[in-house]
Amino acid sequence: MKRLFKKTALMYLITQGGMICSLVIMITLVSCSFKISKELLDSQFIAEFGNEETVIEISYNENVLKKLVESEQETDSDIKEEKEEVKEQTEVIEEEQPVVEEVVEQPVEEVEPVYYLTEQTNVELGSQIANFATQYVGNPYVYGGTSLTSGADCSGFVLAVFSNFGISLPRTATDQSYSGTPVSLDYLQLGDLIFYGYGSITHVGIYIGNGQIVHAMNEAMGINISSYTFMPIITAVRVI
Image (cartoon, rainbow, N blue to C red):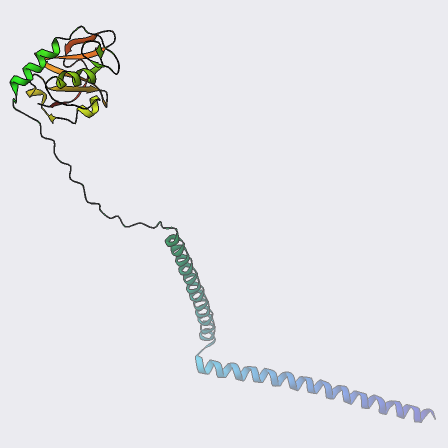
């Protein structure tokens, strides 16, 4: 019985040992086959492209080329994005530009030139008017009045004097300035009207020669004689 048991155990060990040996042999064969295949592939690759240094250089060049391609793609992408940004900014600027209206040149209206008298006219009549007006020096100034004796303001005094010679004039000094022909101050003659003011006409007097006028000055002075430059002169006209 003991001998049978020993024989059976021995057979089991032999069987297991054989399996283990077979497994070791198979692993060894696979490892050798992989190594041989790798060596064959490396030898073929080296035979085709050169030595191992060449293989390493090829691999390095491939990596560099790949990086260059990726860098170029990124650059193209950046350029495209910049172009889009510039386009958007240009559109915004165009939208913000103010609309410039076309300027149409308007025709310039021709202003009729003013011609000033530079010669003596109706000298005798002018002298008569001046002499007549000075007769009322000392009479009162009355605002709104037109009487040579009871009182008159500046334009009322002028109106009354010229009315005595059959010459009709408007009531106010401003309107009287449009009733005659402008005359140069260098060619004033007796009987010419001189208009005064600070920007607009506010006073009028009759020129009597020698750089003087007769006029209804104010309530304090009444009708009197003054220098023709006692106020800023705006214009002078001749109505005779």
